Length: 482
Image (cartoon, rainbow, N blue to C red; front, side, top):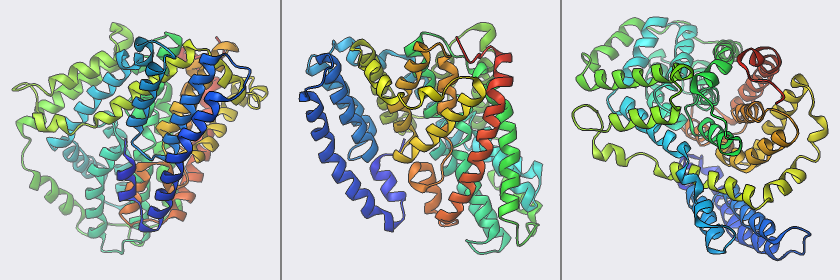
């Protein structure tokens, strides 16, 4: 999860002033709205009203980002406890949940793949295997990003690994930085780094969704169940993204001059497989095998992630040093713990029921059968994301309401949450994601390119979803109603 400072550093200069103004407005508005709700003469039970006041403060700070998301979450937990809205055990309940530690383990695994050079080696070999023409390189980059989601659970980290490779390929084509080849390769790399992790329990968004469902429903979500549910969408998305770029950005040159030699030299420069790479690969393959078979052995995906993450951090049998572990984004772990704690407080004080009645009053009548409802949920979440500059903010502020509505109206909360999370992958503006910010900062595509690609792929993803939900998911036991 990028901090506000990271986002500003990655943003083009023209937008820095806009972010600064938004942060200043948010810094003042958050406490004012919180105080207004705290003392408002509303016909709501005091504990629920006070909870909503603190939640409103947290939401405004998450939207405007005057401070890091994690600090906002921690302040909210502290206020729930210090102002005697609930007990300490409830106010910080999310930190005893498995979800933050699932992500921590996955992040350690990602560090192992990145720091040993394993991820980069796999990337060059995938490209060498698929081919060196523009269409084949395009397909190899999309495929590589998909594979990376099993190894590196962060869109920002994935982009940081693949971007230098892609920059080298663009230079090898001998074309300008805004050529169709450059724009096509870089925009689909950037976009898919924030898309595939919604369809695999890998990134912060999907892990948060899983944790919120388990927290509010008490039902376990297995890694393999989630993966199989979205596997057709993954494969169709790879194909659709490839065709979309070929259609919108036809290449000036179809072949990379000396392409096979270029990739062969890149692999040769890396030298033979190192012991560290082999160890990292062995541990990560073990994790994938255990995740893929969790329906058989019923070991929690979080147990597997944290266990393997700790294993790669140990001397001799692991590959990470202490300084590598310190590079892990602990703020994201704190953020997830705080969000889950907020959900627990909302439930205990009945404030969640108030939020559900308000937020779902207009959308509720539109929900019914799986075909129509899947479309309504998808496009509502897509539109809601316009208001928030972070998919984690979007999910943390709305998932409790969506899940609670599903539970109280006879729908399957897992289906609702999976659709809502899936929709957070659809974006058309740079400000909607720190991954898009970082990709945009490389200078190979413009904002209008993102709008085109985002609209086309969002429509495609919406069509895929309304086919999966009524016809495929029930075969896996994910029914639309409870």
